[in-house]
Image (cartoon, rainbow, N blue to C red; front, top):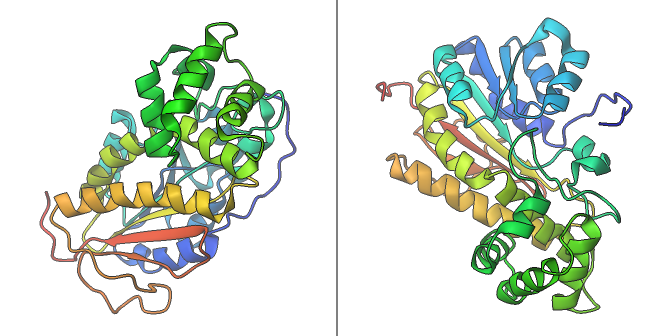
Length: 312
């Protein structure tokens, strides 16, 4: 990848995440940042007195965080839902686990990573260095599979038309750059299609390329079980894609929250009504999921494991 300046990025949701982690050190000295990225959250958790394991599938993210934090934390290059990562977290018995979803600004700034719809960007979109690229997915998958991706992950009502348009175009010219996908979107959505549409539908492809929601559903129960009683699991998300717009982010959040709620309900945990845990952290003492009252394009969901929970 091209050399990018090492900037000490401050995570958008650092304040809410640290607030959610308050008290974690009293139940366990260990914490896990399962989406390490630049290391902003991990560094702050380490400063709060926790020994942090930082996990990321992206070798560039590991290198960036290591250059920033050195030996202040431990590192593991793996997808957070991989057997290696889940085993490491289980052995650690942490008091705090963080998942910060989505794409970092550093990944967006590197056109070679293919997360952006800026002209001429490669259609890659992989969070790590293995697996199929976005171009390979778009050139390979049948129309029915592409329709599902755009409908379920992109909330697109014209998903079938878009899938057929991609199928038609790739027969003559395989998809390779952002322009190919942007032009297909414009052909279906019309000349008024713009950055919010591109952001939403590129995001849908990214979710499919990286199996993001499937990974989330697999990791949540394992992280829950690994936590010590009284520990906390926090899932945070925010819009990193310029031009995405509030509607786009709310659409993605609706999908992600449904996975979170379904998995936790299946595990027998009570879901509370929305509450502001930043102001009232002691109001809800059971195993709960509740939502921070922060700007509409961001969310933090927190699960607290009861202190009298038996090991599962």
